[in-house]
Image 1: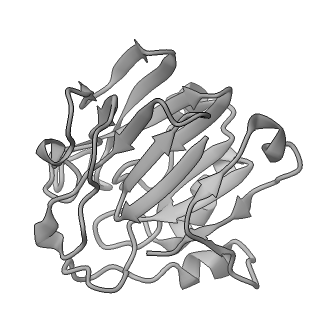
Image 2: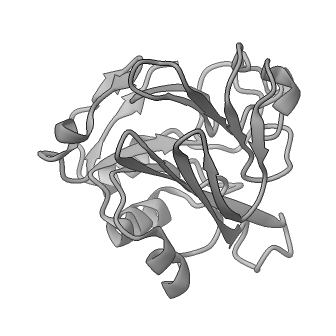
Length: 215
């Protein structure tokens, strides 16, 4: 599996061999970042906001998933779990979908723009054991550093990838950097990578390790 991050909540996940690609939450160029380019087999959209729903940016004829439900596409297992974008059960910003993706025997959880104070018991049970957690940490529109740390400890993944935080050129105001989240997680030295390539066996020695992507 290879993972690339484009900023905000947008990731490209390719399977081993690179013949299948899945893109999550493609954004519009109006947010100041360069949208993902190229084709994909599958596109997931956590919610209908411009920094997450730019499906037209993706070439080809991808299978689109934009809400809760269970899907099996080209050998990739996807489970969408209903959640909220805010702390008032969607009254402020609406709904959000958490996605569980299983590819190459690796289970990835993408929380989208999760805004609840914590995961409910039913959400936590549905998520189950996770290898890689993609979690928003920038606050303002989602959970912030302290909430994200608590939720990460609820899930206990092997690897944590922070997302939806302040980066250069991003025109969306109010987001914090990931620094506070790293402090909450007790991370003293940042691990910054351009892309992540791993196999199932590579995760066996990891325990809540946090990695940041260069952008």
